[in-house]
Image (cartoon, rainbow, N blue to C red; front, side, top):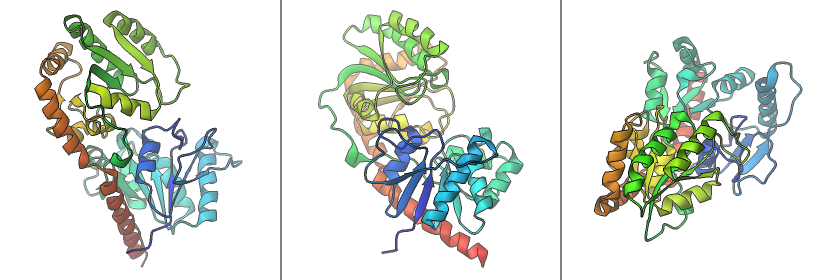
Length: 365
């Protein structure tokens, strides 16, 4: 068996590698961590994830702003740990900064969002430069297509996000008559459409209830935005409970109880982690068809336009009235989610790392 590579994984500065504070990227990094890997990121005020080596990025006096200081701190860790590969998540500027400092070290960049909206990747010329200097990895074919939209010759690998089935909580044998929205409570996620649809259907379905889990941002200190304040009024009128931010394990518990989980995203989801988690926990999934969501949901869910509230309400009403259909979707969703099991993705990630290093060494000859 091949020796494990020494990989240094660099989180975005805002991500926190801790169970109580982790965002989507930190959760994925924890799920896919390999032997010989060290994760670096911003200092924590709580314990980091267990079972994965974590080191905080030191604060370095540097003239060129917050990101410059962060890059300088990561550079110090690279010199200390001597990795064979540096994997940067979702920050082209940090990947390029490290490439400049360490021209003889392979650097990969994992894109979790649309690269066309990122610093140092806005334009086709910037993306062409990026693909030439670092190994680019996308979490979905949709993200890959966005990167290659004006740079068709660029090499972009695809390594999807995953779900660790060995760590999932137990699923309830009897599901509750619960419509659930889980995620960031912002307009882009279509949560207001969820509330409006619930307002139409809950009065005629008294044995059902609806709940929103989430806040404007990840973490218990998320601010009360004007959108949230307005939504609270609408949710109260529609009898939709708002639980606020909850730790990830509680979100999964709710998905394991809910009959239906709704992902009505307006913006193109780069991947659709909430949909994957909901299917893994056995819920029937109703999603929009934007971005990478169809790659995740496949034929196991039902699609609805988040900007057509009557249509969304009709889809939900049909599922609420059809327990057999929900049961079939639960089985199909679980089977679809198994394709993204962390054990499978970890093996693919290890092979990808080995390929990136091999290609890099070949280019240097």
